[in-house]
Image (cartoon, rainbow, N blue to C red; front, top):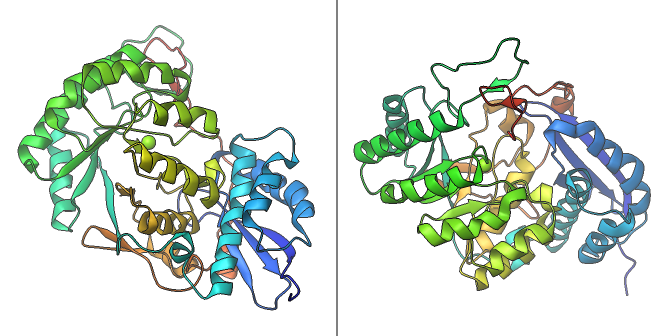
Amino acid sequence: MSKPVTIKDVQTILTQPAGSRLIVVKIITSEPGLYGLGCATFTQRFHAVYAAIHEHLRPFLIGRDVDRIEDLFQTGMVHSYWRNGPVLNNAISGMDMALWDIKGKRAGMPVYQLLGGKCREAAPVYSHADGATKEEVADNVRRFMGEGYRYVRIQQGGYGGKATAMQHPEGIQPGAYFDQRDYVRRSLQMIEHVRKEAGPEVELLHDIHERLRPIDAVGFAKDVEQFKLFFLEDPLAPEDIEWFRHIRQVCATPIAMGELFNNPGEWLPLIEGRLIDFLRMHISQMGGITPARNVAAMANMYGIRTAWHGPGDVSPIGHAANLHLDLWAPNCGVQEWCRFNELVYEMFPGTPEVRNGYLYPNEKPGLGIDIDEKLAAKYPAESTIEEWTQTRTPDGGPVRP
Ligand code: MG
């Protein structure tokens, strides 16, 4: 048997070419010139992920056989004894994706080939149409349709909406205020308007972003049923999963859920109970390609499709991982796409491209994507105190963002 290729070093690259702070793991191997890249992006706590990789995962990985992806995923996850959680899962994901990248490069094959080969040539994508008014949202939907998009997510005034007037008590705390009841009324009017203007064919999606009280989310799902959404996203927080049963009892609005999930205990009951229709996990947040492949295969047996999380706080390497899973998975539903700027394409050569509403891979071995480290260093990740996650209702009470 030939000598195994081993892990020589694990590097962590922090960069911010657009709004989000991105974390990329680079695994250097004992074979000259052979390395792999993985996404470990937890943008709001990137210093913690950096420390988890550099101080804890790196010493554990050096000298290991790069071929043992499953073994290193399993042992890496329990190496800290305390497992799961966004920091550790993202660190593990950086390793996991980089090892899949390396295995693909060694095999001379794109990662989707290692998963089982293509079920489709490209992934159908959706992008986000927002607007201050329902008319503006409808205009933006038509613009997307003109570009070839057949799926569009529609929001008015961002998550939670922008209420025109809110009556606050005196001396309120700073925060991102929104009115849950006002949001429900406006969103239903907006969705009705867009459906009427854009016609029955375009697939419309909407994200509640877990901002409603559970019973109001049940009511929203029921009231919006008539407008035939492709899916209603995150109607409930992971803490309220028992409420999904009630949504199912009152309507057939398709439900997407999962970007905050980081523990199999959170998604297993929803799949087994057939209580959701689309898995929305953030692949790095759940630990990488290995657990995503497993959950996609399981969901397929329950008639549930995938719609992996794909915003700007997934690095292009994470988006490439999403796409390889989409090309392979028989149950790929749709892929969220964030329309990266030119700089991102320059910094990450091989970033997938959208043409006529479909996201295409390149056919390079591995994940098919690289990073220009010199350029990345020119855009260092900067610490910040997030504003949008400091959410409050009109009376000042804190709520989940
Ligand atoms: Mg969402």
